[in-house]
Image (tube, rainbow, N blue to C red):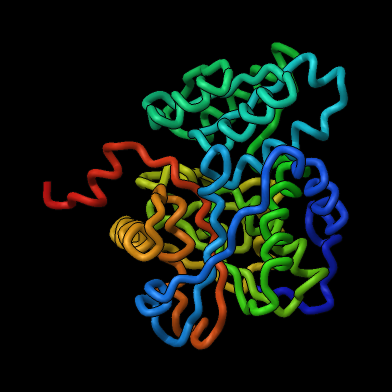
Length: 334
């Protein structure tokens, strides 16, 4: 796939640097900047002279980066749309971000979740005041239902990917990273819909065009990866992965072409590699991490030869880990 030319501007992407900076101003009254830290234990485990920087989005009020996306989208709404309310589809982290923003701004929120959704994430959304509706068996079916509800009830749809303010909100992570370090060669992102990686590409193309961006998907949910390889959207692939935060079945219009044009590489990681990375994060940083939150680090292991000797940032995207999954990680033989 083509790499991002140094002269490419953010107009290639669905959002500009100005959009990201505007989103940063809107969300700042509600959340603080998150820490960017290095851990010798991670560097030693990865090897190849790679220095790993960890962006701690697990320290957000909802324990996940998608609070940025929700706040960015909701603070951009005019008063009349706020009064009507919003709806979204989510397996948890996006829904929590939207519900948190709704609580702070007084906006009614409906979240459509798949049947059998992570119970802890569903409980967290309900605790934030969201109306929960179950539909379908996976994220994309829930998202399609949220679109129907938006039309039927006159609500504003806050899609987790196909929304410019959502992508701009995700880009604020990278904006912060660049404020926190001058030593950066690459960023490695878990890809579900692609808001975080495309937001990063928009920022980096303007401010640090030599920094490369890599994508990582779960091998059990490879729809975007397979499409990226083909250069065109592939038929949907039913996701089968523990990493529910990136368990998407298809590409998304707002981000796919940007991923094709901008990513310097794309890899997939197995369920075993995801769990191994979760254990490493927990032991090496003493932070909880959900499966999707460890996918970026798992990708660094896959990319070690290409990233040799470089400083690489990964996003600990979330720590909304249910007890059953945690037991699988810490007690694998039981």
